[in-house]
Length: 165
Image (cartoon, rainbow, N blue to C red):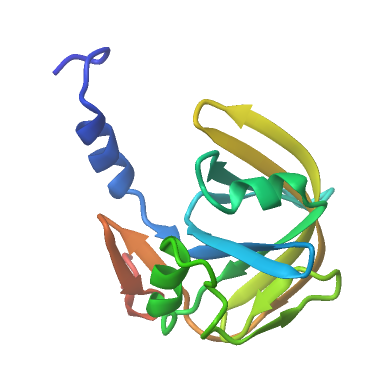
């Protein structure tokens, strides 16, 4: 394989080597909560406090998120693998068996997370098959719960990571 020729499976394998946190991005469509699992989340700047998520345009949550002025990023805790699976699915009511409450600014904030951010959308940038949503942090919270992490197509307990010296 040369630098300019590779299969999409190879690219997916490379991406799988990058350990990420697991989030559920939530918003509302009218009074109806909407959300999806994703690991394409990043802190952009501290001043101003900006974050970004990347959402596939074919996602059922893309439309409501694109139309919304606010959304929440729920950083899942190690005990929330099932929550990650539910929000990764196609269920019409992903919130049916998930405890949540409206955040300070109205976005759904899930119970039991390790952390959460509520943001105001500042930019929407279409890139290929995805939209990058940039938001300014309006409110946040965090706990001492260990995070759920994802690598190589599998979930792991972030508390079990070992430190290299």
